[in-house]
Image (cartoon, chains in turn yellow, purple):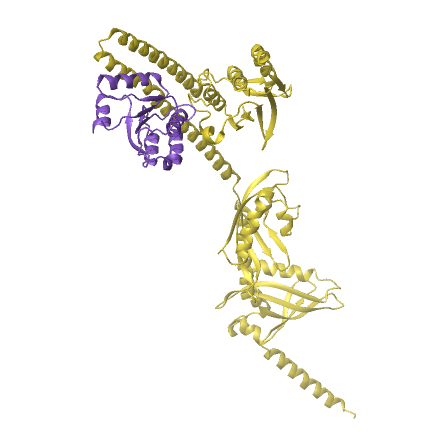
Length: 508
Length: 131
């Protein structure tokens, strides 16, 4: 078909009209922007929606240049940036987008996003054809999110607590920088799996941790809480308290996400430990005080009651022979009382630290000294001595106490040797749970621990029919060891022998 | 006289002397047997029974003694009590007014009838033997 040119023109014109109509009626905000050769921005076309949306009044449109009215609505700083972004468009750019703020008479401050196609004419004029969208709501949400994100980030960094977030499904975990810092890690270190973190848990705390965690996973506890020791990057252990809660479950109810916090409670734990130690010392001192009260009631009052009863007797007595006998008993009681008072004085001295000066003493040397003092008794009783104490081991102790202790244990071992065998005494240095102890083992009579164990170190306790026994030695010995911060233990079996274990407290 | 066969169990020999004198001067006609510790006293009871004699009817028991003390004696006594046909009265006689000891004596209510604090007086003896 041949179309005559005038009809063709008419059709073209009609098409153009309808496009224009279409364009101007579109609800979208359609615009054309031209960047002129002399660096000006003009808007050759806006559709009606723009005029309506930007609340341009008829008055304004009539009296002013529409480009300048539109420009005046845009934030000045945003317009300068817009200008800059258009200027920077080069030949390769085919599209352009820009966000800006405008202040509208009734709508107020709105955010817009402009998207456009770029066309460059031969004479370097740039023209943009595009569309604007009101993105205020999105922008507000974004700003809001950014703000809370920033606040959260700040909280993470400012808080001394760490935060963790475990994605069970994908086996990924996030540890905040504070959590990382607790273990002396920095940003460059990557701990992104549960396993890498768990590897650092103290082996002794692993079971408790796993059971606490599983209990929460199984819904047995409303939240997860566990304190454990964790290895830091430099190889120290820190006490970390971890708390958390399931925050997301899948449709079957299985937990898929947990988050929680980390708190460094090392200092707290140390204070707790110190407190316990103090309590222990107080208990110990209290125990000694009670023991002392007990001694006084037992040993002093037995003498005073003898005095009272003997004096009562002497008043009634007429027979001079009996009176002399009572006098004798009074003297005996008086001597015994003096001796008890001497012992108590010694005990008080030990416990109040009058002679508690500690020195660094070579244990082997001191033992040899004591053994040479006792050499006559040792050879008379044909005692075999085994001294296995290393030559270079030192203890922090009061010299006279150390001598007295070694002397006491050794004489006891000789005194209570078994008549049927050659007496042996073995001195050895052992280690028990990181603490060093002196072991003195004999093959003597031994003691029935079930019967006497509790009273072995008591005052004036004797257990064998030995007339020399005064029952003061072990009592004083125990007090001396404890005054030096150590402790003494005993193992014994009747007819087999006795082993004393002396723990030294070598922290000066 | 309530009691005629008396055991005094005390490691203090002066106390043995005092008891002997007190009984004599108060005309309490009893000749006690003296033991220096719990073990010897138990052996004393055993000996009597072996010989077919009656066990003692009163034991004055000290607490603090070597070898076998008062409490240990009571533990052993508990065990052999059922074999003894006769009722034996036990009084603790101790210089200890320590609460721990007084409370512990209450644990032996079945065995121990009373607790006398040293020094013993004439009144105490009268109470024991006449009341």
